[in-house]
Amino acid sequence: MGAIALGLVALVFANAGDWASRMFLRMVAAYWWSPLIVTPFGFVVLTLLTRRFAPDARGSGIPQVMVARRAPGAAIRSLVSLRTATAKFGLTVGALLIGASTGREGPTVQISAAIMARAYKLFRVPLGPAVMVAGGAAGVAAAFNTPLAGVTIAIEELAAAYEQRMTLLVMVAVLVSGMVSLGIAGDYTYFGVVAVGLPFRQALAIAPVAGLLGGLAGGLFSKALLGGTLSQARPLVWLRSRPVLLALLCGSTVAVIGCATGMTWGTSYEPARMIIEGHHSPLWFGPAKAVATLATSLSGAPGGVFAPSLAVGAGLGDLLKPLFPLAPGGAVVLLGMAGYFTGVVRAPLTSVVILSEITGSHALLLPLLATALISDAAAGVVCRERLYHGLSKGFSAHPA
View 1 (spheres, rainbow, N blue to C red):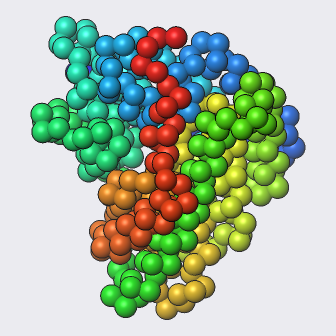
View 2 (tube, rainbow, N blue to C red):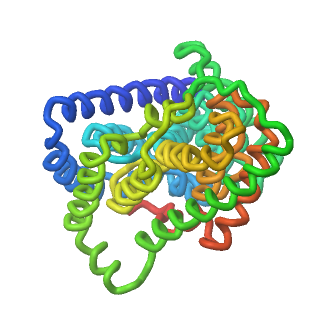
């Protein structure tokens, strides 16, 4: 029952997020200057609402589920409560409605874990760590239409040590939520189908470059986000103690970058898709999207980094194409995405499986894996702590 409910909610959440993004872009098309007002003050409102009504709804959602797994009984009253999940839903849609550079995949994980936990409590079934892991994994499967990625994120991120007794529950939750999504939305791939491969020699040349550059760039992003969120340096502590000012500065940054580029709003699914299909992006797209995403994440507003990181990775891959003119452009872009995405989340298996499933690029599985492993090593040099593990230190399983 929980898996069915979270599958339905994930689909509603996806449609609501897409609607919010369309409404914002319509406003921008009519009044190009409007984000300079709407976005900064929207950030302030979202931050104040989050801090007042649902402080555990801030940020991605994946760190919250990692903490909830360690103390599920307490977490259901705070980190994965229905109140927090409801706020996460509405506030994330609100963030997309004001043009924040954010994604809904991380929030879907937290919302799904809350629904699964509530279903177990409803039927008076003992609530254990496996329930949180299974709910989060099913959320990824439903959000991306990627059942295998749901399993891999359970292994790499949500469970500190993958226990055998979790296997059945994770598999069933992923299967049921995936079937609900498939039955209603149909079989689809987020970025179309990239039905190309890479000859061995080309893969041998591109994978190290994409992995090294993507890993370094992704590691820098993680280091900046962790530093801005957790650092005890006096200027940062002072700024974090003034959430309205911080939200206003972050919102203004997102607004200025968005108005200047016209491409960094929201998830940036469409620019990423166009890059994969062969369209060229401006040289500044990847860096601009990364800065907008960093500003959004630092503001304290709810929202994830999955989709924006994939867009940044697409921009990086587009920059690499001139270096390998004989290689298929779509394949080079995907390796760039794998490099950057892995550098940010430090989960190489999940990164490869997600990219393979959302693009149908099964012929690139081995080059993607090589890129991801190189990226993981490179990112570890820049930022030793994994992003979600570091961010989880800012949450407690006990109710506020």
